[in-house]
Length: 119
Image 1: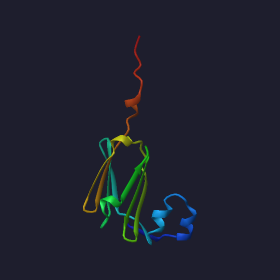
Image 2: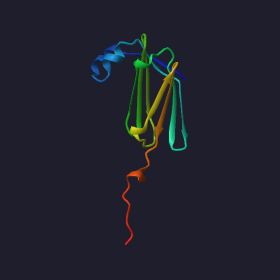
Image 3: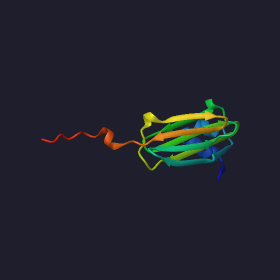
Image 4: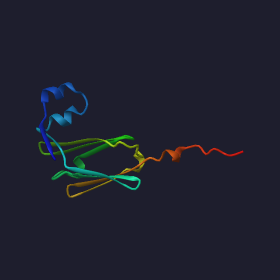
């Protein structure tokens, strides 16, 4: 389900983070998306109709994902808690004709583990 809300420009002016981008848009929309787990990956698909690739911004930490995309007076906003630790260096994203495909690779904590020798 898509959620639409009007941006409160007065409240936005008080926030220093991302205010400029969000205040320029009249509408803030949570885009349609699907996410699922597949093997060691988390797959995400986001529908961003009419958005140019250059207007899509994504950021990720080990357990969170943030997306902002602008089209005319619409700001698409998606903030996800991934509920899993991911390897941020292995994130892959593709964008084609309004469909964003993102693949997150789960971080395996044993990859960084110390091998204990047996004596």
